[in-house]
Amino acid sequence: MKERLYLFDTTLRDGAQMNGVDFTVQDKLKIAVLLDDLGVDYVEGGYPGANPTDTELFADERKLNATFTAFGMTRRPGRSASNDPGLVQLLDAKADAVCFVAKSSDYQVRVALETTPEENLASIRDSVRAAKARGREVLVDCEHFFDGYKEKPEYALACAQAAYDEGARWVVLCDTNGGTLPHEVEAIVGAVTARIPGDHVGIHAHNDTEQAVANSLAAVRAGARQIQGTLNGLGERCGNANLISIIPTLKLKGDFAERFEIGVSDGKLKNLAHASRMLDEMLNRAPDRHAPYVGESAFTTKAGIHASAIAKDPKTYEHVAPETVGNRRKLLVSDQAGRSNVLSELERIGLTVNKDDPRVGRLLEEVKAREARGYAYEAADASFELLARRMLGRVPNYFDVTRFDVTVEQRINAKYERVTVTMAVVKVKVGDEELISAAEGNGPVNALDLALRKDLGKYQRFIGGLKLTDYRVRILDGGTEAVTRVLIESEDETGERWITVGVSENIIDASFQALMDSIVYKLVKSGAPA
Ligand SMILES: [Zn+2]
Image 1 (spheres, rainbow, N blue to C red):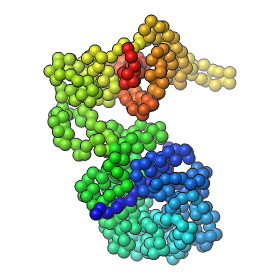
Image 2 (image 1 turned 135 degrees about the vertical axis):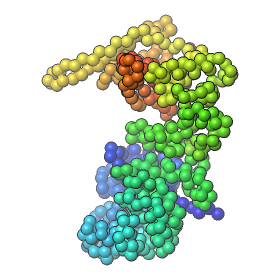
Image 3 (image 1 turned 180 degrees about the horizontal axis):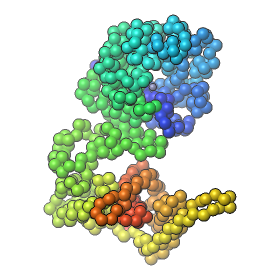
Image 4 (image 1 turned 90 degrees about the vertical axis):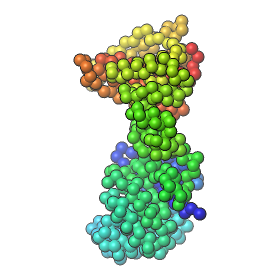
């Protein structure tokens, strides 16, 4: 019989403390559904009363399988629970559980809270009692627990004990400043679980020494049975413990997988990469390619000998199978690549060629020659696919851009403001049809992109959902002339993302190549007829 470990997500509360993160109520609801679907046990929505968004979020019942949790402070020193407006508002919130934050360090109580250690203990007891009386499940986040324990262990333990004795379901030990190391966490949590049963103890780790995940696992080893964290490690400063790394570790790594079970099923684990990318999508930031388990590069192999070994047996260079977390294996086609890389990539794309086909050798030579000129096919998988398909004669000539023209004009407008206006005109031939489109944009590439995608005649319906999500420029200082490399990331209505590349001495021309590849890739992918 496996022991149950509980996952508590605080993306919407602690994660929202990160610089540049600003969730609307709609964003929060979407993320809550995502977490619920994944199988997380607790979703902490926010801090009702602290801001209008969180107050609104807790104004209505949110029907989740997960325990929907409101966060707030214990009663203020010197007041009764019923006479503290903040606490009253928290208890009125429509939530299944209440998570109180309480000080558990003698030093913090005296300096930050300016009250006595005894009054702080009374505040914990009164607040837990008040929330239980309202029928809520109660959690107490013991703030600064580890630092407090190091200074004065009896007092930190007394705070945890007060919460537990009063009936809190979970006493959560917080490494608020994030400076505690895994061996310290294991020892201190061990001291706590000697007094309070581990199935009532949680861990809340911050990532200030990049060990929030390790600290969470150390706490579990010492007996804690709830882990708090966030999607993609979102959070203040360096972030919180990353549930996207913790979940697969608990599910796939022997020591944990054999002893424990969590609410995330094997089937749902396959949605992990998707959940991670969805969050980045909502934050409008490019996913971390090197994120463990779920990053684009997490199962990407470049070196030739590694790649040929992986082709024989993936276990040779992979710690887990990428499909288990919804990711995929990727063998890079680059300078160092041999025939085996090219063949594996062709197979993944779904192009079957005989391994002795002379076109494979020609493709490899072409890739090498282009990479010497600045193309980066290891990043631009969609451009590689088009190159491969063209060499094998399988890309229809959908349309020709016979001419384009981009103007950038700077002038003073009627309000005496300096404005820059950019316009692009594109002439396209689709079959016998000649089409001319013009568009204004907030820069030459944007204008060109808009004009190009404005009217592709009979192909327009295939590119309706196409959008540009990232644009990166690098000046390469190879040979005699500096050249510009442009990488464009696109996304379509299905959520699939791909990257295309263009290289030229001229940034507009490089951008144009990458834009064209992106559109043609989308047409191929959508099965647009020739
Ligand atoms: Zn925190």
